[in-house]
Image 1 (cartoon, rainbow, N blue to C red):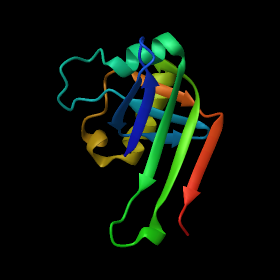
Image 2 (image 1 turned 120 degrees about the vertical axis):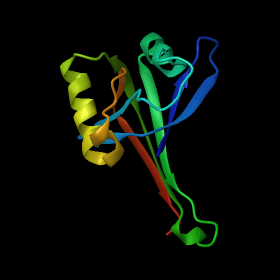
Image 3 (image 1 turned 90 degrees about the vertical axis):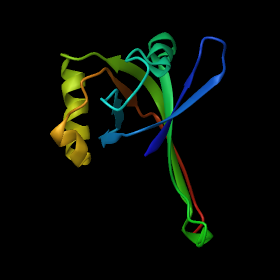
Image 4 (image 1 turned 180 degrees about the vertical axis):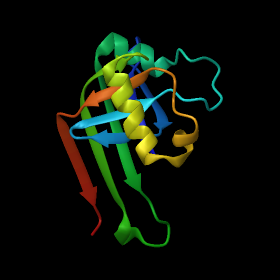
Length: 124
């Protein structure tokens, strides 16, 4: 799981946990069938407006702090609409990563981050 970071129209940070896949220097995530109030999510509006996003993936272990690590990816982003080549590529990457998506692929819009910056930290 990753946390996707975008900025809303008031300049406030908007964070949400997402499933994701990496395809080269792209991170992809898509709106899936899990319960949501709407398929027009704030994260999509934020990316459409700003053209940017970041994601944070981390590992935390209460019992082994020497095993802690995180990776942050940031760059320009766009919304790939269903029916587009970018959307098909994002869904294929997600289906390959998550067995639940093999049974029921995400049908909603996808967010694609073209990673320009990688930052990481590890306790070991």
